Length: 257
Length: 284
Image (tube, rainbow over all chains, first blue to last red; front, side):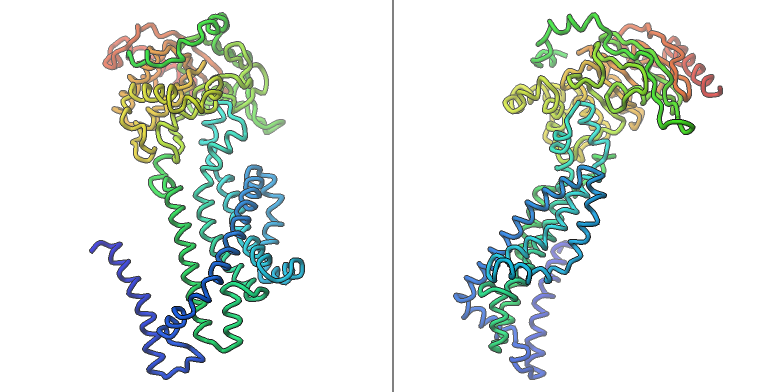
């Protein structure tokens, strides 16, 4: 068995073991299913209620992805503006830090005030929450480009745009994709957050409603669905990252030295 | 050497060559560089005059910090002269339409591109190639890049990424990238400095072949006197900071030169003389 195989085997056993321990402890300690339902009960609920849950899953996914896409567009634009000029970087940094340090829960009531409850505040929260890591990463990637790489194009008489396009942006790609992994997770959190507060759709809303009706196993079913969706989104973007910026993770040092 | 006959654009503009021919390929007119101002001013280069004809291969040697690289930066547009003029083919070096090829000591291949894409980069940036880049990148330009890579023995590595190549191979692709757009002026900043002796001598021969084949105007900055003597047909010695050209001698050995020649008495005597000259300027 190779090392990677062993690691895979062990982490699978850990996950399975976790749920087994949960199940067994609930039975042994006679925990009421109003406090903590057993995984088997949750699984049954998920299965039987799936037709009802499915549109909510799609709704959460939709809010997350739309908000995330908007966030990427805004984040990349701001990141390029800030990253290509040292002065812009220094000038804009305090404001960016200020925005980023606002707890994002606090913006939900404002969006509800402006747009009413529903999909819009969820999308906007998902967007706002993911912009900052993208801006910072793009800006850092551009600002840390090795001057030697830029000199290659400068001696050829390349314009600023050509340098940005051929050196700056490709060089910033690994930073960008690293930030996307973080950003998609944050967007997801933002969307669910907004749904729990102000929406009649989405998994966040399902969990709120279920909890006020004491449908505890449905609450947990929602939680597990959220976990699975989060993992899936993260996995998609890690895969994309490895595809696009593979050059950065192998033997990069040979190329620059 | 018949590889070069496959390369189309070489014989493309005989008319232009004639008009530029009357002017020196490179000329420094009292060019000087001063960093900082007032009491903190550091003179990197005292007013310097230097002329290179088309097809010259000039080596600049001298102690470290003498301003050799400053001259290269002036010519390559990375630095502006504080005073004086830098003319390339009669035009001021800041002019955009200049065609300069440059190879640094670091190969600085862009790590996200294949060797082929790296070598093709100047064709994407420099006129008149960039105008037809979209059409030609899979045709004429690709053939041109492949012919060059074949000439330096990298035919099978076009699709490799820089991290898959050794230092010597990267430096060979670096030479290709510096030459692919038929530059008016080829600038070499100690391009073989970081290589081991065997690889270096191998690259000297490749460089000589490329030079004799294409006859670009070459300005080579180096610490290595044997490298200067083997490759160049003219050697300038610079004094220590502030830099100044103190000797300007032709190398009267017919080309192509055999690599064994660097151990011949005449060659050893020449490098010995250069060495003593540099030792003198260092001590003063």
